[in-house]
Length: 290
Length: 132
Image (cartoon, rainbow over all chains, first blue to last red; front, side, top):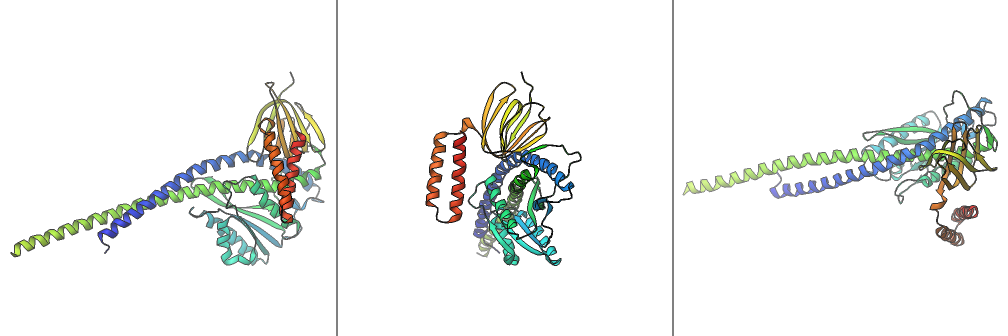
């Protein structure tokens, strides 16, 4: 049975914790709004990019894929898979990081069971921390944005440059990016997005463009850019999802702390009452004995 | 008054311009070209340079763009630039300062990777200065 003093201490500890989680929730809410605006601002660029590329790619692929860039046609084999796992730098955001890692790990296991080779590239500290436990030998590279306040295009360029470098060195055939797509504050869906070979929705009626320089030169220029844009989009979605998940998690934590304070206060009062009663009985029975 | 057409300039981080324009001069990879209304479908990559925009209301704008492409078709002109900044917002003094810093970085670089990075940065900055 904890003493009155113990209970009083616990109540004050939990109250302090509640203050912290409440503050974190509010910070996450403010950051979420910013992250959401950033994600929305990036959308027209990404949409336009894929529209133009699908047009171009449709032209190339209709020619039987001959001479098409390996970035869309693939390397011809799919033996080695590179999984790019993008997670957050910080924890305390519910199941956000683990759900991304779980999806990536599940697919990595499936690929291994099929006799494929799996390589990992982790973006963000938390993904690395979780994956190094059982897949440390497969992690080729880790990228962290510890010092970066909010992800920008430069960070996406860093990641995609790394991917391109590995691709050009022939280190993998298929590249898939894992991140959490932002649906709403309460729902973030871990998503796998295949980057290489790139997949496009082929438009129904392609517009016939005149190209300058020629089609292939444009594609060679655009495909690596597209990679960066896709990574950028994923990073922004991830940032929004992270804040959303953190907001929900901290809201829960604040509520739990409140419930805990209530029940602790209740038992504190009960015990205080019991002690008073006990003292009264002692005094009365002492008086009666005289 | 020339016909107006929808013009959009987007960078990965935001949409810079969206509105009706009458004439846009684009620094294409193989030379500058001017887009007027009802341009034939045309796609070109960009080289670092100045974009000259005349909006439908008669105002004009000079914007520095780097990396990306222009997509002109009868429905309008869309420019995707990796980097875009209004010339008016660019500060020559700070640009010179940045070039100076980049030069020092190249000189101070200890290994190849940082030197290459610094040199690319310097080259980019000098390109900007040259086109201005």
